[in-house]
Amino acid sequence: EVKWVDYAQPSTLDDALNLLKKHGDKAGLLAGGTDLLVLLRANAEASDVIVDIKSVPELNQIKFDNNSGLTIGASVPCHEIYNDSNVKKYYPGIIDSASIIGGTQIQGRASLGGNLCNSAPSADAVPGMIAMGVTCKIAGSNGHREIPVEEFCLAPRKNVLKSDELLVSLNYPAPKPNTGARYIRFIPRNEMDIAVVGVGVYVELDNNKFKDVRISLASVAPKPIFVKEAGDAVIGKDVNEDSINIVAQKAKEAATPITDMRGTIEFRKHLCEVLTRRALITAIERAKETI
Image 1 (cartoon, rainbow, N blue to C red):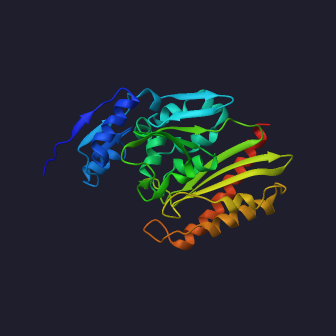
Image 2: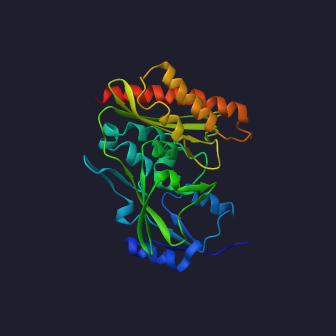
Image 3: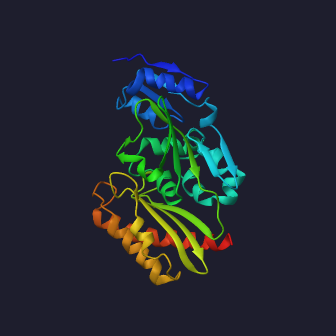
């Protein structure tokens, strides 16, 4: 059965929001389309109109300021992000995920905002965002709001966006000295590009002690999770093997994975410990390079 689908390309945020207000859940937002088009083909998404938001200026800019940090529009494709000079200089942790979402062709289209809005438990971009303390800027017919990214995803393919809202941008805090971030994942094989476990880590050091540590895990719960207790357990402690192991153990304990074709519960929990340790060690190395 062939279904008629309209196409709209608003050039302003207000026009985009008016379309969402009119069509509600029947509007499919097209940023890169790497998720939406697949879902439409599989009849998993029932949209009456495709709203192409790539022409809305606010969704398409990368802005950096030493005081307010980095703002990445929800539609900016991955290749623009990891080739941006400020991202390279101040936010190498973003490149860890932006450079592994799909292959080169996908990265020409896919956006970090789209990865977040698709809200898959295995989303590669989200643990890094959570670890780095990203704020989501959301616009709707009732105005604008901001929320911490760890509150954005609710369940597989479900998030806090109302039917008349869209994600405008992601704001990363201003870079600070002695900080570093890292995202790593384990995939079952190269042609199966879905994380069995993904780990995002952020650290701030102070004279070889942990001043701040944020850990986030993907693929081990119905949504990417912020493991606050893992970081809190070592704040003020010396940076050494013992404290790193404490963080890794806490991450393992926080994971509530399922067994599926990609891995068992036991395997995933083991990976949480191993990958958290590895990511933390690299984040510490990066933090020491920013002194």
